[in-house]
View 1 (tube, rainbow, N blue to C red):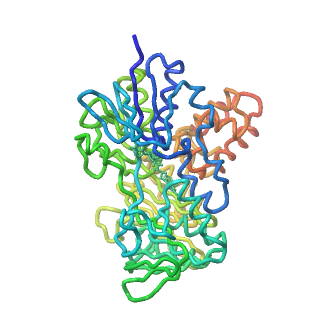
View 2 (cartoon, rainbow, N blue to C red):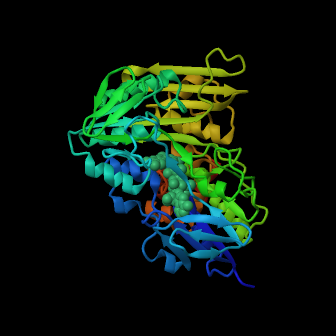
View 3 (cartoon, helix red, strand yellow):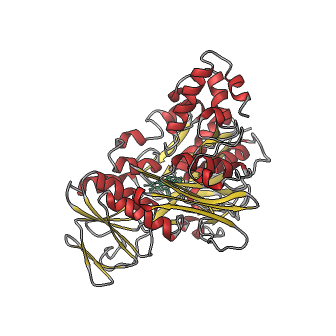
Length: 493
Ligand SMILES: Cc1cc2nc3c(=O)[nH]c(=O)nc-3n(C[C@H](O)[C@H](O)[C@H](O)COP(=O)(O)OP(=O)(O)OC[C@H]3O[C@@H](n4cnc5c(N)ncnc54)[C@H](O)[C@@H]3O)c2cc1C
């Protein structure tokens, strides 16, 4: 039987992962023949790490996901630097911008999302492209443009005080730029933080040299001068970095007549309204997921690979409980679940601790004794414990304050030290890797952090779990340097 022809549209984080997952299940390409089409000129790269590139913590070539020989090694046809301009669902072909036409049995849409540019006068040219001195922060090319323009000491304005805007601001301030963040809402990261947490975060970032203009819109931009704000004030800027939100890239799917809402609507099999077309990652809209983070896209890639290779035709995606982390030097922030519950909510127990002078804020939302939401700023130990409780749906220890302070270690339940963690504890969120999986890899011979990363992919996403993976490797080396790490974990599972 001939392998089915699968065309992947989009060579970003989800499209690249899907191809890897297919080749894990079908190494010789007997069941699936793969073609990936990517509009960017680069091979797929880890977009999540662009903030680290901007901050100077990583080189641009360190974020590449596939080396030059990857496609040949895995028998995948990769077309970069060209976009798919049309899907014809009747004759089952996709047409590329360069005129080529590819037949398909199945399509995987992995077109991601694109940066949204606010309708500020002067920000875009007549074609809707960013004006000189304006860069949206989404791609490796954007990152390189920012670095080329933001000479040390130059004033930079960041439009948008959400997660990515703040990561960009922190990175540029760390490089010596004079950074002002302009945000139309009264507090930072309003999707993930309540106003009190937003204030503590702003205070901490201000101490690191970043200025804020909150609750005000940018009304105009003049190249070489800067931003005019709606209250009549002016923010000088040689460069404006726009990070005002993203929109799912749905144009192609919409033109093909697929059902679109905020994203391409999919069911639990990640099927669109055409069963031959799946959608994964930022462009997909599944009821169980907030899009815009890599973990859901990578989990979805594995499910579609199961389905299209026939490895598991019953595989389904039911959603991902996401935890948002700010990746900025000197700041430790995690937010999860329902964060906006108020102290007077009659159905929820809300506990809060505020220590703005030391940049700390902790909020816990509980229902029926279980953590349903949390904001943990400047409290890394507590964040680790609360996240484990949230993931596992376990009752929280009765001493809530001790938990918020990171001092609660109920017998055998949770804890920040590797020995205390249960096997099921998720260590790497991006790749959904548990402590148990790391132990299994260790037992199979992966005896270093990089070997554990190769075997399980832990720490290869946003990288924020790297310290935890190191801790587990160290602990395994101590408790059982030779073989039986399972024994070491038995007490904890
Ligand atoms: C600076 C930055 C920091 C981030 N930090 C985090 C983080 O800490 N944690 C986290 O979970 N997430 C983070 N994200 C979000 C994360 O990067 C995305 O969720 C992830 O990249 C989504 O993967 P994707 O494959 O769906 O989309 P993308 O990675 O955007 O890839 C989509 C690709 O499809 C291509 N494409 C689009 N249309 C077509 C077409 N018609 N034909 C061909 N190609 C097309 C695009 O050019 C793009 O290359 C961050 C994003 C940015 C920009």
